[in-house]
Image (cartoon, rainbow, N blue to C red; front, side):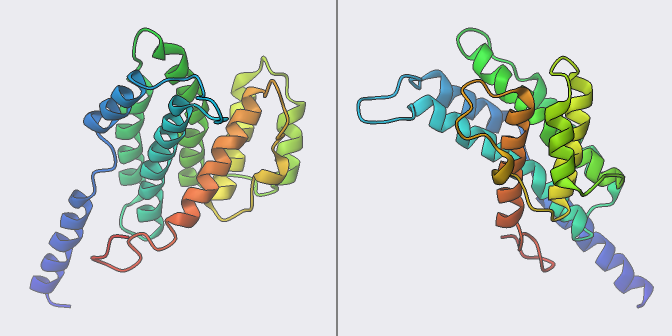
Length: 211
C-alpha cells in the first residue's frame, strides 16, 4: 500500500469513528421527560404500567448504545483504549443524570442495575474473566447480599462471558421471585445484554455499513 493510500485509509477509519454518537445528554433528558409524564399505575386490563414500559425501553436503549461500543471494538474499529474512553463518556451521562422528585428512586434503581453493564464491558475489555456461567451464578447467589462489591464482581464476570458469546441468563432467573436480590436484578440486565448482543450481530459488520 502506498503512503498516500495508507493516509487515505487512516482518515476514512477516523471519519467512521467520529460518525458514531453512542449517547448524549439530550438523549438521556428525552427519556427522563417521557418518564415524568408517565403513570406508574397500570390501567384496567393491563399488567404493566406506561411508566414501567418506558423504563424498560430506557434501560434497553442504554444497554444497546453501550454494547455498540463493544461491537466496534470486536470489529477492530476501536482499540481497547478507545473503547474504554467511549464507555467512560456514556457512563458519565448515565450514572450522574439523577432527577429529583418522584423519579429519583425509579431512575436510581435503574442506575443500580446498569452498574453491571459498565462493569461487564470493562471486564471484557480487560480480557480476564471466567466463562463457567453456571458456577458463577451459584457463587453469586451464595454471596452475602451485604457484600455488593463481590456480588458485582461475580455478576460482571458473567456479563463479560455473555459478551464473549456464552449463553445466559433466562434459565437462572427466578420468575416468581417477589423480592429479587440485587444479584437477580443484575442477571436480568445481563439477559438484556445477551439479547442486545444478538441484535447487534451484524452491526457495522462491513466497513461503511451501519445496521
